Image (cartoon, rainbow, N blue to C red; front, side, top):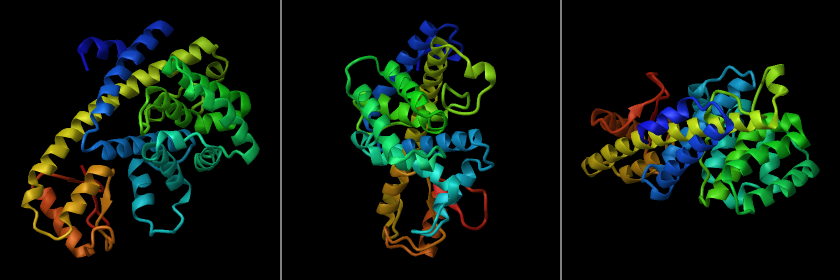
Length: 307
């Protein structure tokens, strides 16, 4: 990311400045997405965690990123992950499912409920009918993302506050031709139009001011996503460099999952790798010693590991 673009992203003073900065930052991000880096899965899921943490805070919840990660990874398969865990699952849906499936009526209804802005089947269908033409049309991707939030606001203000950034990211990804979406607008702490609690002045902002806030949010989010991709890329290179030194059966599957996901737990037997919890702990201790992964929880028990 060139220094002039970082400066432009830092403080756009008009709608035109914000649109330019966002378009330039997204062009750089597009190149990252199309490289299909080995750690692309971990990158998307790490961004999903960041978006979930911001969403939870806007909703008045106390869970931070670490608590959200715990809600998902320390819950037994099939058990209820709770409201905080469902927020994270909603953003992981955006990061992991094919873009073409994100705007279906059933997905919109499920995700809106997980994010705290439930829609009945009829409302989800009406919103989907209005949103899908935006995603499929040839045109300005940033404008389409902003228009998606405006559509939600016309239908249901509560749903717009909860679902707006998620839906905008889905529409943006479709417009840009990505096979998987990247959580962006939801990762930015400064609320965009329709994306969280706002002051009375922000609620009365003009459509132009709303778009400027959305574009500025995308500019900053794209910059942060590019920086995270570079950081995780370096860590992935280190992990792949030490992988041949691992002798444990199932280590190849663990390395593959570390490249795909935000974090893994080593507190119970992992059926996907065929390793016991003791075997996983020893493997992760070895990877930490080699500087290939980090322990993310800071605990002595129920530890979590990732790039």
